[in-house]
Length: 365
Image (cartoon, rainbow, N blue to C red):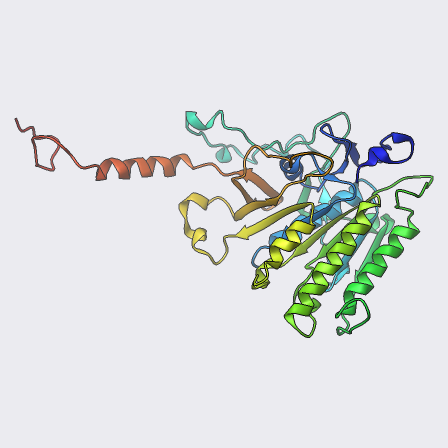
């Protein structure tokens, strides 16, 4: 949605947002400043962000909690939907914002400081700190949960359905209809449509956890896929004409992908990333990835109101979960691993010349 075409041809000022320097899109933060930097500055209002879950859904859930935490910190309303986990549990696990940002990027002790080889000193890194005239994006402490008083004062709409699937005129599983109805009513009640003129304009953050999982299934796999794709088309249409942003996590690894359903979901979305966890895979023991927990694959970059999609500085991205925060970085080859590989190569290089003896100290003329 190009907000420059709204009434007055001016981008409205809304707390927690900023205009894109590349086009006329109004952006909100994902709650992870490094991820904002990767995707081009943030999530445009009216867009749909897809997170393809990791094997156990752990890290995708954390990213969704960051998105919700940023909404509470910036006083933006939230709509949280889930069928796998009670939304009250998702809300209670939202991390607390870090108010003291002076020591965020500093190591806790001098032992954590590592000297690296000269060839790594000039490598580009992801900008993880919010910049600009106003605060955009915050940092959060995963070891601390948001206070109950803050949650009570926040504008949060929760949707949770644990009923058995039924069929209606629109979907084989009426759960999708119920969620769409909840979204429509929330958008109408809060006057989030671009045609509305509320006294105080706000952006609605819609977070849907584990969409299309086994609990969303219908009688057959074909019906389940049709329901999921149909819901996403309806959902994206609602977002396009509203001051709202949707973030969904989908367990795409559960699909056999016989009809490339994962690619179709990515096509419907505006931004799509896939999390590949190292847990239970051979990469878990690979020395190259010993400091990380998984790979972040950029499946689709934003191409709204522009000729070409955003092209990040690097696509070799990894993530790791520390005690207090979730970190996204560019994959760098560890110096000690590089030296080891070089030594192994030196030892296996065959010696050519007059001598056939393996001892390098002996000279043969």
